[in-house]
Image (cartoon, rainbow, N blue to C red; front, side, top):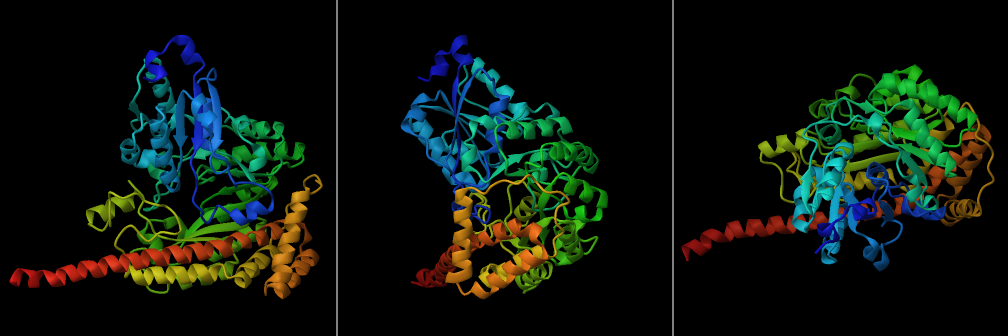
Length: 543
């Protein structure tokens, strides 16, 4: 019998909660090899879990385990009264394993976050006790009330309500091992005003962007500053400029704070492509020390953009938008997708040509996936084109499509693999990094000088050895390095950091090729078997 079934008030005041963040598979964004070079374990922390810890009663005790850094111990399991999990679709395998492990040990286990909110049935099958779905500001208090009543299971939903994020507390950054991460993360807004058919953000968080106050976000940054953080901070909004009015109000207060502190953080974020049309917003972002932005280009094919209702990408030249952001001083990262309905052969080559024309170093390229509850999912379900609705969506760059496309899946998969391989061919990648940085406008201010750590010096030496001596990129590497140093020296460190990421992409493009080809072979075997059964059936009937 669980302790909570014999609860008492004093026990509830000091409940011990083990927060566990499941493993990520290797992915485009894991940057494993580059992260290892600088002595870190992983790129980003579990912002959702530390926000949950801030919302729950502060009389409770919390222990955070990020399994991407280290595994939980027997002592951790023994210590916990309650196990609480959160994660995304790509973390589903490990999350379900953790649910089963917690139940095997007789622990009460609860879960929330995007994965279980989208597809709660798998967590139920694994034996979950509590599902805390939708946004935690609404559903976590319902969960706490249920615990106080002595309940040992339940499902908590917001029933369409959206929380006022101006009341969201500062995440518990103190629970993190800050030395393990390359970046920290903060969130200013939730939701996006657009209607892209394949996107689950508008399903989870709505199309009316809700923002925190400028004072709130600056307080979060101040917390990180007080904890000694002095590296990258990722503003993880799915569309940072979804509410342009409020973003500008934030930036007007953030810029003087950053200046007063000596620009302790370099900021990166995600934004829609219409950022390039707002000169005031760009100027404010540069004043606040933003250095990079990720945007969903998806495809240069206008017909595909219109079909998937990404109309904001059809109004102006996408090439000009990227080049303008780059000239302004922002490093551009972008997402691309192959497999839209009605897509003509050669879509992958058109993406490569676009990436080369704009010199985007990080081009996240994947096959289209139908995510649960999106407009695309609903449409394909009505058309009978979802391949296996009962199976989970992997949400990674190493998976075939989970629906029947309008082009043969074999053709799409082979085109995808070939184009991904070419995008991250070492000479091609280093060439884009160079062209992107040589034309990048330096930041208008300089951060305080900081002596490099020994591990950073070692990382630089490793990059120079591998790319400047060991590989056949040596001539290109030295020519570009000296050119950057001479022509645009203030972007030198960003240039070197992006060269370092080649170490990740060399490994990851091989993973993409191996896994897609293995799935394609399995798909073809199953299809051949099914065809053989159809052919042999009349013979059996005749006999």
